[in-house]
Image (cartoon, rainbow, N blue to C red):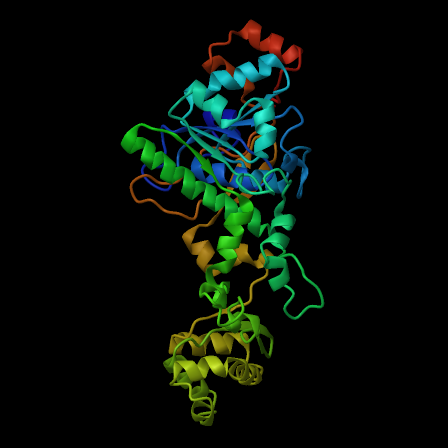
Length: 420
């Protein structure tokens, strides 16, 4: 239900625990100069955990306000998905008065996060040296495209660029005639998760020592680390006994298996799984043919085994195979399309999707915080804000009077859209 208080901040209120109990970061304040997806998804998670997020936007607004499905200009589906639990202040940072506002905010926050190129934010006047001179114990996190000790430090980077650079587009060419991008913003979202982890680690250090620090989370290096977890392969050793790559994935052995009415993901993983599967399928001779009791033999025959599996699964329905796999405790799931996830029985039961009423966008559905804390629940306190919705509110907290606030608005230093 949207109350008068929650409507002021942009949406409804959700609690996973006792009324009035907020997340583990309650009391932490973050100055958020991020945009698009990488930074905003990170700060949203921190906001879900209870932090007060002050999102600083340029007068034109975050670029992602216009990307995705929209009912009203500036409030796209993607923006709604990565900007809840934030207060928006729209400031022209190219004006001295706009910069003064941000510099007055710095002593009031614990964490400063941006995902600009470092040279750009330093030129703007908000590099680490400047910010830490205002608040020495600040946790300052930069999430640029490339690490600042390398020759690509000043290159622009977006999700596609990083997918291509880190090897993902090349790996995604398996079964295709050219490299291809994954149809999800995997680099942005993965680096965003790394930002959350890094900021929390630095905040923990601050709580123990009282000292802040500079934290750098480069997209490129983060994604290379992500990709090479299983794919460093032979390059792990010096000299390399083989090329990079995890052969089991690269040969394409595992694939969705056909059924009489669609496809299913079946993953017999252990020797017992394969033995039970071949026997219930009426093919016990395959157990000996592929020597499935021996792990090395299974790995060597994985392509052939999954070819046999596909020839078996196509004779029964998805539901029949799900019942069999459940009985045998073999990992399996139907193939779900993204449109079908809202009706997934498990997700419905755990309440991952929730409904709310946004003050301007009306009834909306959103994905609730998936992480659960028993004592300090993650909460959706309010939905994504209008551009500069909280400009006046934040300025009042900084000591600006109404006359000064109106003057700043009239001269375009700050911008504010109000909830009707």
